[in-house]
Length: 195
Length: 198
Image (cartoon, rainbow over all chains, first blue to last red; front, side, top):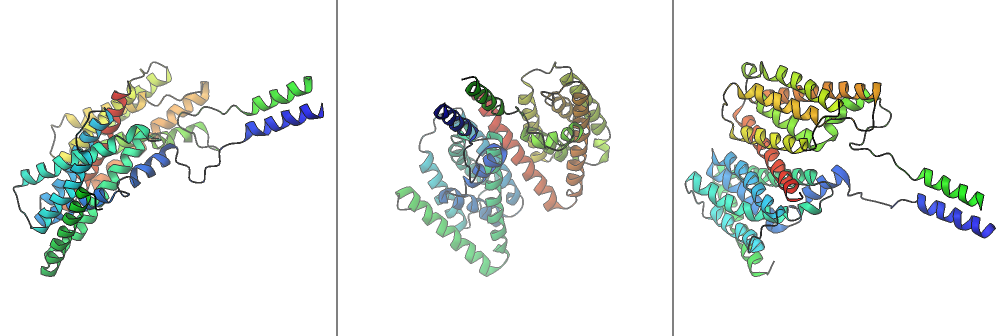
């Protein structure tokens, strides 16, 4: 009898026990944090996003605001394709190429027509969006995850724009172009697998 | 054996947890939970923010009818939700509205005058329809619905006010457009996820 009571008592407390979650990754907050961190933990994403901001600041108005508006919208279309399971060839190579091309644009101080700059940025946004979109169905809270990674991406653009504002000064322009060169080199590293 | 059964029954009665669709805040009554309800549903935050940005980008002339349209349509939507006649597909309309108004905000162009009250009415109706208080009945249900109505209007006015305040300088207007594009992008992704999971 004592044995039965002990077993039932143990079962009782076993049923009451809940999982110990030190860093709860559930619900809105968990989804938002994992979405927010996703672009920040990939150097290929980070440098490409900063390059978009740098290039926008370099090109001046209206590119300085047009590129950060175009990028998340086209990225969402790429993300939707990823969510829908539409295959996109060479996603990782496309992301690596975005760092190379966008970095080179900054390094060369390229000034193409505004529509051409928007198309270049938009094409690469599809690759970045597709990579994020394939992660979306596994997120704890898909809407919070999307908001997190869109905001994180936007803040990386703003960081690039803030750095790019140094283009007002001669020394600043040299530093920004050197930064663009470093991003392009990193792109080569991502493409070849060295980084 | 009877005692063992009683112990097991006690264990099973402790296990069930109340099902909360939108995690009400404990210690608050139904009215205040209703006021906070729009802030606890991410899709509602997006639509309120998108509507507020879209309306706040323009002056009072465009918004003269938009806010009353939101109020009336919101009350209608909440009334229908309270009667239990809201369809299941409402959430998709909430996200589609957030996407459309986010895109309009990102475009930053002056829209036809009739679009502003139409946007207010659309947002109010679908936010109301999507706010049915689950697991509540009678007086508590009515209190929750009234609270949600107050909350929806309050949060929209705040969003409009902030957007209006930050639409004076060129860089502020750029900021609003970027925010609009973020809202639209988030909505597009979740709409795609909803469509692909059907």
